[in-house]
Image 1 (cartoon, one colour):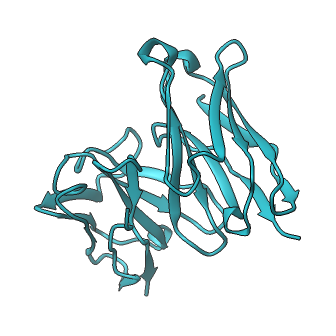
Image 2 (cartoon, rainbow over the protein chains, first blue to last red):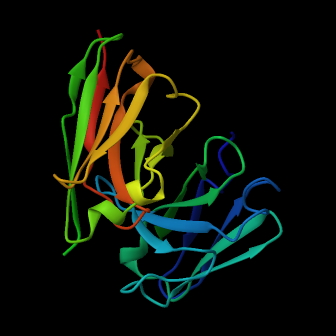
Length: 111
Length: 115
């Protein structure tokens, strides 16, 4: 089971919006509405930001939003803030025996 | 407050064994499907495996790289999740996280496999 494909890095200025893509296949992203997104600051545990494609857990800022089209999911961060600088990972349920596959990760830099 | 605390990591030689624990609190552990995820140094996240609640069968599923070497178990009386790791390889070196359906995550415990 190959990892989902994300851009290695994305950057933006404070206040701007950025979008991170997560490309899979018809066996994972395209097959289920079970795509999640995680934020990870250096040396810290991942934090769930989006689940089931577009749902935000309680306490997560509404500046974070998710969507999906075909085999590609996306995370948009609007009103970019310095604290958003972190690594972001997507994940999806998959039909393979490895039930969950993660993305390759994207480093977000706030300029 | 929901809390997950991993322990048991350390340095082990290739071919050796280690058992990780994850102590849970703040939620009904017996109802939870629990997952282990690992992250090699400087690398991305990798799903290791998952165990269902006993009410849902209590069975575990594993990622291909660890199947046959790792075993996930649970003790609901102690609110504790376990990961028994045998025949360890250098490529198993990683921080191991436990999580309740990916929210929240524990702080992780480092496993280093090296001679």
